[in-house]
Length: 475
Ligand code: AMX
Image 1: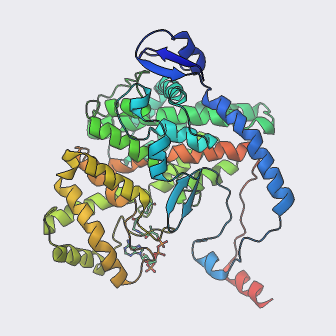
Image 2 (image 1 turned 45 degrees about the horizontal axis):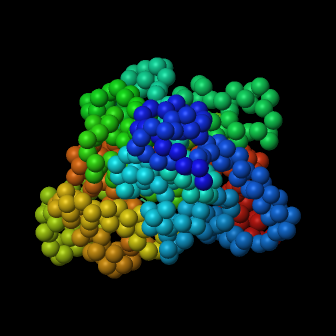
Image 3 (image 1 turned 180 degrees about the vertical axis):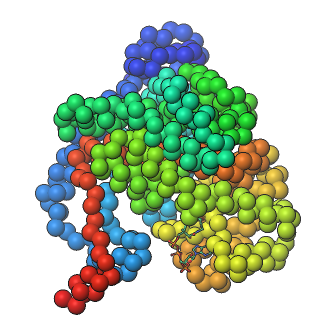
């Protein structure tokens, strides 16, 4: 492969391969020649269309299980009724992204060190590329994507005005969803559709809108942080030589904190996709199936993410863990005291936040990855709240098993995510799910692109009343 050398300077986004070539000859970072993400997706689309055609031709009538009344009454657990390409969740081994586990991704996906920045964790840009194409990008492809996102990251004035007009007391997730929905003012998909775009081309403006939205999520999130908490610089200082999260960190006032920047990269990369059935991903898919544009579809997903049984759990966990810290002490708290605290939560009729999962039956590998990150940084190893959260993760499974209700007594990702943000000084819990919201777009929007490329139909399951159900069973 052709190898080029470019300077660490701002390059325009439109055609990264050409820009890299144009910059060849200057010093410092070495890259090979590359494609843009859109070119890479264009290669994958015909392969996927062919795969779908074969699946329909050869296996259309293959049964995937039986539907029982308890499925209908039990939130459709386990029913195989959705196509989702980016990731698959196994109840025992956890999430894989196009077949790659989190440790696999940490090994093969480009990090900031490899594109001229600083950091060892997966770049969200790398994860986005993998989720969209099923392929591991080269560092230069990731660099090109980073530059494209930086070039598209600034918010139009009307969006800034909308966010600025919202009351500070409005939950940050409601603000987030509002701003994302309003971006549909400029949707290329919506415009193309109204002008008679051909169905075979739906995926193209869907991809354009998706990239545009992913690029703007950090600036929206940073503006909300500035307005609600008076933190960060309130400017959209987007530097095209920096990756998405280095820019986001700068905007929220963490530009100098290497530990926090790399943590945010890891957090955002691994929260990106968790197959299709979770509330946020499923919502994006459902709303998108009506051919709502990516902004509307993802806005709806964010509102699902804002529920306490889903994304909001990371906000809940931290409030709960800090109350526990006050009651029992920090990392040095005894196992007995932690047990007592867990029981008092359960006896008051509340769930233990950060524990349990609708699919997983083992500790969440995302929890493990974030816990491993904590071991690599002295400021986290020595943190009282991080230590307490780790200790709880050893004690809680026994208590939850004894309690006997939850099918999965182990920690999920939300058990670990907030305490690190807290330790780094991001202590505004109501903001935590916004960071999750930046992330989930990495998985939900690529599937929307694929849905359009594959011509997936509007989603319309059958519902039944209790009377009609009874009559149906009698027959
Ligand atoms: N603490 C106490 N009870 C729990 C529990 C927990 N952490 N997790 C589940 N249970 C209870 C349920 O409330 C349910 O009780 P019920 O029969 O009285 O209604 C019973 O155990 C069986 O539930 P389940 O089949 O094990 O779980 P589920 O699929 O219905 O729900 C989840 C999954 C995540 C909503 C649930 O485990 C929960 O509420 N956990 C705490 C909140 C949380 O951490 N959410 C984040 C999940 C990850 C994410 O989406 N970000």
